Image (tube, rainbow, N blue to C red):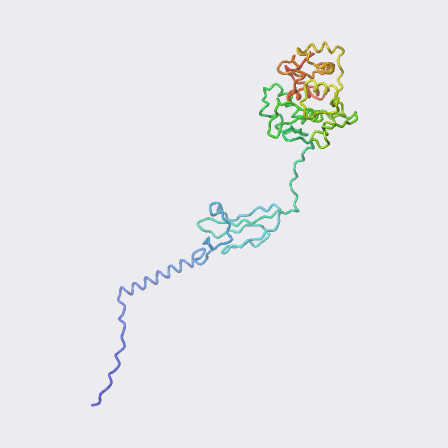
Length: 349
């Protein structure tokens, strides 16, 4: 009997799934299908990556990370220059690129981020005109500056309260635009006035026609801040130099000199009996002889204002800014350029 080779083993057969395994497979496929359907039907899609901040390079940061939610945001364009539109992935751009609108980023967490469109300044557009400034006599640092037009709050100074004795005179001159305060907002009423400052005050208060020849003073160079005012005050007859040919612009002007200057410049006539008028002042013996007629003329015209005692002139003491303001205003009253002010410190003949 011939031996036969062993036959191949029969192919193995995988046993059939039992019932539990079959149910598990069905559940797995059902779950996977549900997740895939949910992702494909979502508004922005699972594959729209615009909701990832790190993948959106065109978004501009806001203070809190996002801007308030708006359906449509439009950036103002004052110069009407067509602006470029910055596309944002996943968003619908505006069909008109000349509207200058910002493009909303697709909604995330109920907020919309916007990309602000830069608006360049058009140099051809008309710019707002600056308020013209008055031309004034230049003054040194710290000196008072005159105004051609009074400001709405003219006359309001922290160092000149309403009960200050010269408040009415100072306020009236400030409102007229004849005087002003200092850059720090003060008036400094008790500060002495120099001859140069007095010349500037006269020039601002009394525009007069030049009638006399100009004088050259070696202590007043042409580039000196008050040179034009001094020249005007000299040519209109208000001020003069000293016998040695100097003007001494930085010298504090005495009260009697201020009265003489106003009397000469305004051409006030001296009274027939000046000595009798001088009886108004208890310190009349301190008035220089050359100044008696002019001082009497000033007193007769109501230019003399003394504080705190009307009968004490203190003629050789430096005149303060408050006292000069009162003299200047009373000079305007005497020449019919201002209404009288009631004050207990005005000397009445």
